[in-house]
Image (cartoon, rainbow, N blue to C red; front, side):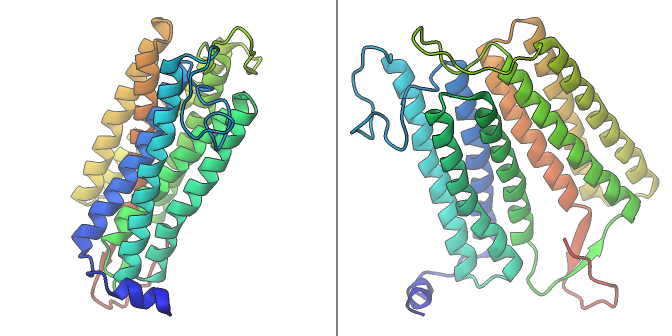
Length: 318
């Protein structure tokens, strides 16, 4: 194939280079979630009131009496971050394809640009529906899913293609880790609902009304915080289980990082609630959500290890 021949002209990237690119993918996927939060808390969600153009007939901001320059700059800047996401995703695909990595790695790499396209479409729908609350929620949740997948890409890039996969822990503990992931998903969903009913609609225009979730925000906060407590309790319970079976140091280290992040995230969320949901803490809370998602994905991935030996132990998928 002609494309393959052109690709072979590029230098073959080392595993270290591939992992560096995968790390960049994680940072850009998490980063755009944070810049999206900044758009919301600065009421810049409609700084570019159309999509894919910023204004009708222009892909860049233009002077407009009803749209302040600062809101245009914030939203346009967020759209520009998309290019960093695209570049990182493209580099990941090029690197693992040039290195002729196994199919599993190629699939995870291709999920990055594919999901970026999906995210761009969701973003366009969000703008065109006037920041309808459930489209905003899906927009953030998609970013969190992409952070999870990019962490798995990073892990799998570092595994030898001819390796055999072994379980590091017993199935019940791996099952508990999966339950932690599901609990995290519930925490994230309820977090977006709190935002949907809260004060940061993403736009403060006197001529537009942003559709909001008509549920008492205090009720949603209690549901969100209760799920966070159960999430932390499951993580701590897993920790006792891992200590009991003398789990590998790498697993315990990732668990410790996750516990620290969840505690910090709980502190930020509590501070948000009692200080009137200041903009800076909202953005920090979204960054914390991305960090907790990445740490949970890393913990899940650490439940397995690879060796180059063709051991007789039964290979484990996933």
